[in-house]
Length: 121
Image (cartoon, rainbow, N blue to C red; front, top):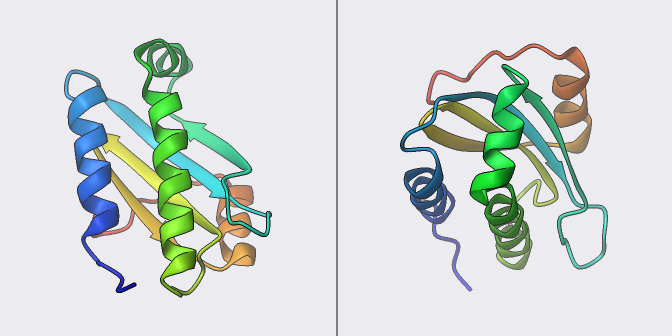
């Protein structure tokens, strides 16, 4: 199987268009897989504002996001990409982007608690 570099962003854009078109959400989601089949195990959230979590849950966004992250984790693992088991999902207004990284760097970023968006977002 050949890795499609546009696959992650294309799917994130579809999900954002479906759920975030009329919402402004800012923050990050740190996601991890620790299972042998590279299925999503947990997500740690850092969002601006407490009220957005309920809105995301009620809209079905969180359920669809979990399903999509699971797909991306498995796809990345199956295509032999580096750091297939963890990453950071950046939410900026109506847009999302994912950055894959080594477990230690993703955990350090999460533990630092700062929301510094990458320039490419």
